[in-house]
Length: 115
Image (cartoon, rainbow, N blue to C red):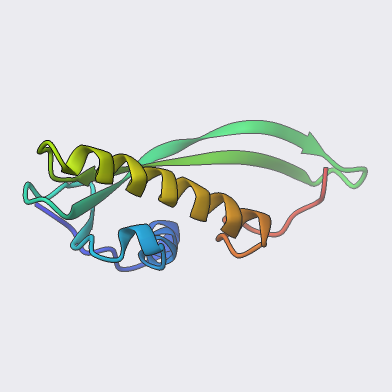
């Protein structure tokens, strides 16, 4: 059953993605599900993996994790829409890169010692 994205990191990521011009007409944006109608999106948490563990001089332990999500889109698949779909995906990637470079993309996790 589709779940509304209510809280947590997935909600923050979904809110940020809703600001993407390339996804302006994509609704609904569900978590762990994807509606079958064209123009829908599903955001799937794909887990997190520890990328580094360390301990400071006082014995406090830290770890860095890399979280992953998958965004799936149900887009029209007809002759003319293929080029539009490709352009939409390229625009989304360019927007995400620009947001990241400007420091406007969401950051996840807590504050810890810098490595």
